[in-house]
Image (cartoon, rainbow, N blue to C red; front, side, top):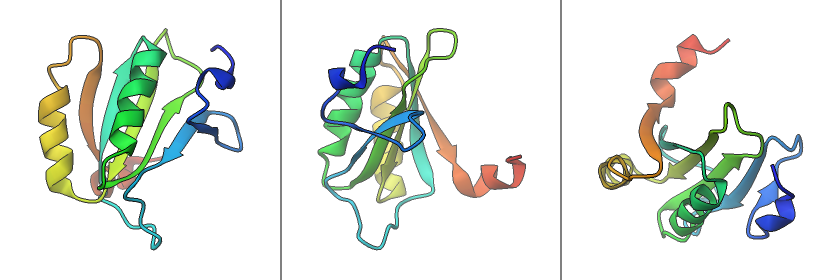
Length: 114
């Protein structure tokens, strides 16, 4: 991946695996929906643009995207305050012509994590 300086709006995680940005609606209590939007894109600039826009929402807690692609694909995540917003945004992005969007339910998947 190109230098993280290409994305000055984002901060690298301590291990450098992701670039992240706190959302406008970040809760000091650190609470957010356990259902999150998951994105995959081959165009990291498009992914960063989408995640930046989402971070500006009043109900966005946190966004991040991978710094190292897998088979040319970058992974992105958006953590929102409520499930209704997750569903509404998924409906909006699921038909995007240049990225894929799914919903991950952490309450369900936690039992399967190694």
